[in-house]
Every structure is written in structure tokens, then in C-alpha cells.
Image 1 (cartoon, one colour):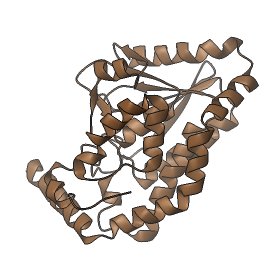
Image 2 (image 1 turned 60 degrees about the vertical axis):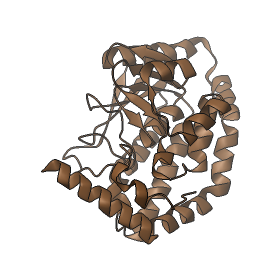
Image 3 (image 1 turned 180 degrees about the vertical axis):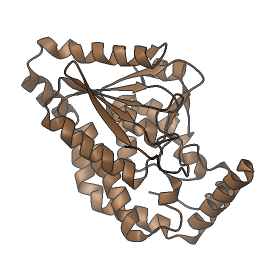
Image 4 (image 1 turned 60 degrees about the horizontal axis):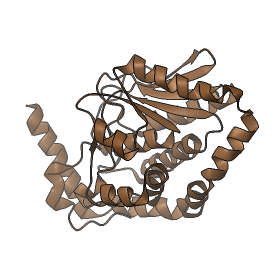
Length: 281
């Protein structure tokens, strides 16, 4: 899953997808009811980097939303310019392996719940969405992205890292397999217009409110569709990636832990963190 040969070589370029960020002081996830539609807002300042705490909060929030049986759910961000910057690198640097295992299995859990959510889901993407941020958006059924100088995509190969199979499955479920192959192998981050053209997003929006409005319109399309038929159709179409995840979940976790224990990986992370500190001075 994670070839390591080139990682140290690219250490100074380590993804805008994995960033060390401090935890926000308040709740990391807010859920509000908007006319029967749940609006889940990620608010781990400053860029919603996915650490264990945020992922646990998301997992619990998804359970709570499901219990309330909404008409649908919209996923968005409190950040004005970033939907989610991806995985938090500090979860991978000199890790406690028990926490690292919990981090990875919780990420898997969030994906399983979001990708297999019984109710209609939409992402109001109000900023950059690289790597893990792109995964969250693709896991929803519909995506509206705010126009601007934002990008979205799975760019792991820029580091000599191979995206996990379930990341790939999600992209291939979203856009044409050929387009996904080219995007994954070239670490492509799509502009908003490019993402629309390839089908990575469904609509563009003028601002966050407009994106949320378009997500609501998508969810309201199902008002006249029998809920059980809609849900069973969605889950049948998504059964392949979900079943595949169940089969590989344990092996995927062990590969991730082995990746973290490789000295070259830790050296690359160390170099990247030092480069960030130097830029901050």
C-alpha cells in the first residue's frame, strides 16, 4: 500500500494533504437541523486536518444523525478556505502504535459509515479538499464546490505513496476509471472547473450558502421517491467497495502500521515538520 523508496526524497514536498495542526478549543463537529436535513460542519481549526479526535467526533455524529432519520445530510466546513486538508501528519510522526491503530481504524469506520449512509448525502465543499478531504467529499452522493482558486483530488503519489485501495475504489466509483487512473498516478489536484468537467463535483457554487442551497435541492429531489427503494438502490450500487473494505480492513491496518514503523518514513516526516517550522519563523 505504501511504497517508501521515494518518500525521503520528496520530504520537503510532503502534501498539502497531511498537515500538523493544533486541535480546536471547541467541539470539532457541529450538527444542525435545517428543515429535516442535517448539516454537519467540521470545525477543527484551522483546516480540519483529520486526527483521531476529529474522526471520533465524526463517527459519533454520523451515528447520531442516522438515529434521527433525517431527509438527508450535508457535510461542510467552518473554515472559509478549506473543506479538509486531509490526514493530520502528527498522528503518523513518532506514533504510539496503539493510538495509530485506533486512528486508522476510526478513519476506516468513518468512511464505511459515510459511504454506506442510508440517507441522502451531499458535500458543500467550501475550499481546498486534497487527499482525505477529497475522500470525504467523494463518499457523499453529490458535491457542490465553491468557485475560486481551490483544488480537490487524491495526490498521494507526489510523495511516493500509494493511496489505500479503498481511496481508489471511492474515486473509481465517482469518476471514470480511466480518469481516476490518470489522476491517481499523476497526483493530480483538480481546479474547480476541471473537477466539474471530469465529474468529481456535480455543480459549482458562488459561496458556501449557495453550495449548501444546491445540496438541499439535491436532497429534496428524493421527496417523491419511496425511501426504502432509494436506500436499497444506493446500498446495492455501493456494495462492491463496502464489501471490499470488510475483506481487506485488517490487512489494510497492518500495512499502515508497518508503513509508520519504517525509518525512512519517519525521517521524511521529521524533515517535513522541520521545514514547516522554518517557514513559520
